[in-house]
Image (cartoon, rainbow, N blue to C red; front, top):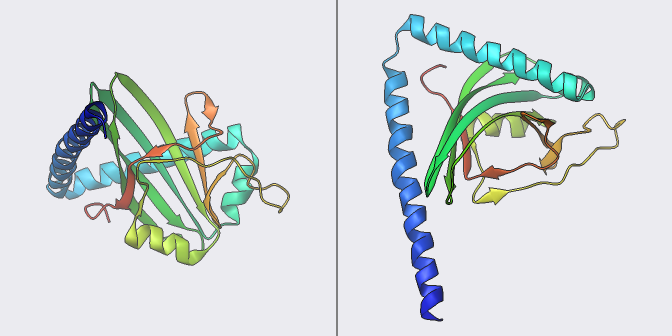
Length: 203
């Protein structure tokens, strides 16, 4: 291996460590702050999340009307909104969301954490809607969480049921994701080091 290659690897590792050092304390601080919320503050947070979910679904149905049928036939769905800012060599974003069991109506409040590495400045805002055809996948998503390592992309696919999943992106059989950006429905899913997990403070 050339000295230049070794140098490149060292730089990459330094960047990766920097991302971890920045993101993990931020996540811990956020959880501690939420743990100290009063009952009134928690109610306010839940109301804000529900409002975000309603607005996101309205936006999704406007962009892809068939998504309404897909969600109504699902075992469960989850809606997240993320606002991330990337500064210089490291950055990340956090977001909140809500998972809903279609059969029981039970709601589970969740969080998302996105860690990035790279050089440059950028601000992005997007919403992600998960749709689960299988109850076991939905329960696993809530109880065990979901994590994408590195960068995950999926090509847009449509199922054979009247194309009811048109515009959704398949991440595994029976698990679909819609991603909304400022330009509308995304045709490619990009999740870089994103982790989804239950919000222990709001449930």
